[in-house]
Picture 1 (tube, rainbow over the protein chains, first blue to last red):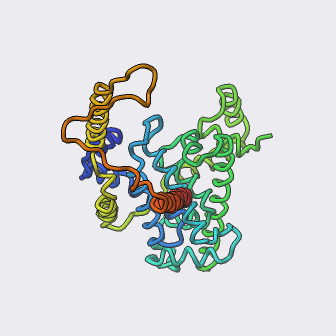
Picture 2 (picture 1 turned 45 degrees about the vertical axis):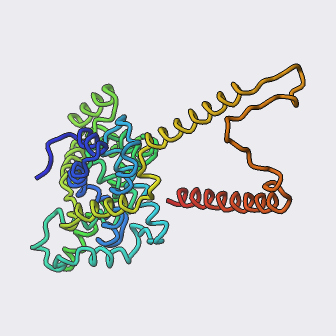
Length: 193
Length: 168
C-alpha cells in the first residue's frame, strides 16, 4: 500500500533518517522512471539498471532538492542524464525510425506477445510498439507529456532544453509516432491478407 | 509559418494565445478540412494519452533500498562522525593553546628594550627539551622529503576524486 503523504513530506522524513519514507517515494515513481528508462535501454535488465541508478543518485542528492520544482520534474531530469550517460557508456545504437532493424528489436522486447495474432493485440500494444521504434528523445518527450503530468515548461526543465524546442520536438515526435502507428497497422493488415 | 496540424495541436494542448484560439475555433466551425483534421488529431491525442506504463520487476523497490543500505554501510568512517564532536575537539585544543600562551606570556618578564634578555620563568620541575639534536641536518631533510611525497600523494588523490566525480 502506497503512502498518502506528499512527495515533499516523504522527502522531509527521508532526510530526517526514515528510510522507509524513501521506499514509499520509490514505489510511487518507479513505474514512470522504469518506463522512461525503457525508452533509452534495449532490454528490461538495462532499464532496471538505469532506473535503480536514478533512485540511488536521487537519494544521494535529496538534500540538494530545493523544492522549487516538482519532485517528479527533478527526478526525471536525473533519469534523462543517467540514461544519456548510460547510452554513451554502452554505445547503444539509437535506432532511427527508418532503421529496418528496429522491428527486430521491438519484437524481442515484446516477446511475451504473439506478434502474428492480430486478434489478441490491443490498440495500446501497437502504440507501445510504435513508441519503442521512436528515437529515445521523441519517446521520452511523448511519455513525459502524456503520462508524466508535466507541462512543456517542466519537460524543458527536466531535459535541459528551451520550452520552444520541446514544443517543436513534441510536434515532430507526435508526427513520427502517428506515421509509425499507421505503418505498423498497415503491415499487420498486409500479413493477415 | 505554422502548418494546419501544428496550429491544431497547439489548440488541443491549449498552448496558443486566446486570439489564436478563437481564430482556430472559428476555422474548425467553418472549414470542413480543419474540422476533419481536428477530429483526427483529437482521437490521436486521446490514444496517446492511453499509453501504458511499463511495470518494473517485483523486487525493484527492495533492490533500490538494499543498494542504498549497502552504500550507507560502506561509507568511510569520517563521513559518519558527527561534526559536533570534531568541533568540540577543535574548541578544546584552541582553548588549551590559548591558556598555555596566556600562562607563558604572563610569566615573561621583559626588562628594558632588549628582547633577548627576556627572563622566561617556567614552572618548577618543567624542563624544555634540547632542540639542537632534533633539528639536525638529516632529520630536517627526511622531514621535507616526507612532506613533498605526502603533498604529491594527496594532490593525486584529490585529482582522482575530482575526475571520478566528473565522470559520474
